Length: 287
Image (cartoon, rainbow, N blue to C red; front, side, top):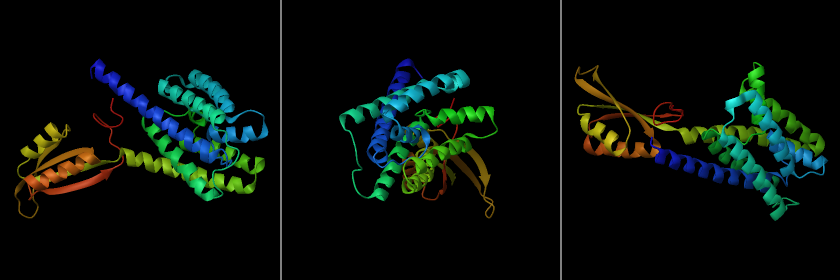
């Protein structure tokens, strides 16, 4: 990858991170803060602390994030990327701007369940995109990573422990109803983020059994800009020699390939399967 392409890729990534962070902040500020929904994390802790202190939630988020970033850098070193620092600072700044430009003293509606749905889905979708680009919004993610490094707990269990403690505190600071809503939101948030990440990363795997693989391989390489593996096989019933084309690609490319094969080789046998993650050149996790 040349320097110009690398710059374009970095700019595109930061643009997506900026938009995702802004969407996450809007969902949290409008639907979570006024209802005191505490799903864990630094946001949940800031909601609880802002209720018992005179500090704004944005001030608490920024202050704790700075402390955690310093600790995380010293303890975890290179695990902290520039992306995470950028998202964390942007998150704190946007929360602070919204608090001053558009102060909210009450929920938008009188339907807490409706607002709970939006408080879960909007930030979860944005968080999934941020995680997918190898960044995070800081906060309790840092605590979880430190716990994972010095204990036998994995990051999922560590996050659950930290979030559970914060959500439990909402029952005492606010009321049982708010606490129960927060517990529901915490569980729904975890499920939503996992499902969204899986959906974003989902690819299609093809196994095409045919007699003339050349046109299919040319289409995969020249038009879809993917690669394929071709190997020889034999039909169990007929004993006839066959060729198998194996490839993987994004969902929108899979539709094009399927239509091409049906048009150019109607006799081909196509097996298409879903996969939640592919690691390698041209896909997530490639080096």
